[in-house]
Every structure is written in C-alpha cells, then in structure tokens.
Image (cartoon, rainbow, N blue to C red; front, side):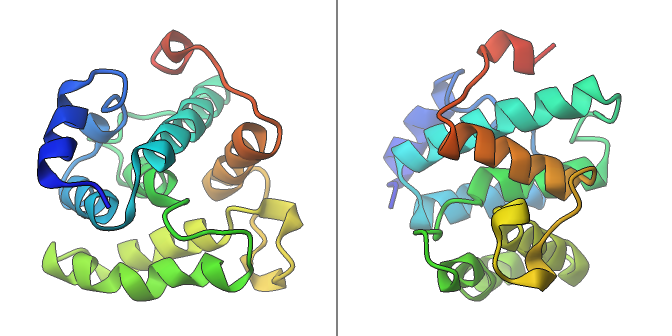
Length: 167
C-alpha cells in the first residue's frame, strides 16, 4: 500500500510518474487509486519499465497514439501500470484484479467494457506461457505486445533507456 503522501511524492518525481501522467480520466484515477490501495514502489517501478518497452514497441510498429487521445491505448496503458499488483506466480492470482479492482472501477464510473478489457489484459500478461487457453493473447495485438514487454522486463531482466520510450 502506498500512502496518499507517498503517492504525492511519486507524482512529483518525473521518472516514477512518467507513465501515470499520460493517462486520461477515468483511467488516471482508476490506476492511481489501485496503486495506492494495492501497490508498492517496487511494483510501480517494474510497471514503468514494462510500460517503457510496451510504448517503444507500439511506436516501432507505428501503432502508438497519445493515450490521452486514443482510448484503446489508454486502456492497455492502464492495464500495464497495474498488471503486477496481484500476480504472485500462481495462476489464480491472475484473476484477483477482476475482483479487487471492481469497486474502484465503479467509483470512477469506468465503462464495463473498459474494465473488462483491462482485466483481460492483466489476465493475459503471461502471453504464450499462460496455461489458461482463454487467457493467451495474440502476439501482434496490443495485449500481446504488453505481455511481451512484461516477459522482457520480468523474465529476462530487460529494460530500455527512458528517453527511448518517450520519443
């Protein structure tokens, strides 16, 4: 859990808040409240590294649009920033976000289909390695690119320079 005061400090830190400030409402409040309730600084740092790779992949494929203007990017971006709040290596933990974050989604008046897409993205974060067939995502989809970014950062220890993710 991150306190309100700690979160305010994070938002003053240009490096730690670099992806959080890119989200529009209701995704911004949803992600921020989810991180404050269930996150840690380490999980935020990991999510930022995954988002760096994800955004770089979108740009390389010519698919990137500013998430403040492109709803589909905002939805996957939001999922990227909270993908690791509950996942602990167990299959069942992939589905905890759906239960625990529903009340936050309701509080910020998030559309049901947006919350569903966020949950599907979180549940598909293992990509091809997911033993649940319905949760496997297509590699060339935005969800698949997020899963690949997560794999690169978490499983391979990879990262990219921050300035490359913002070009």
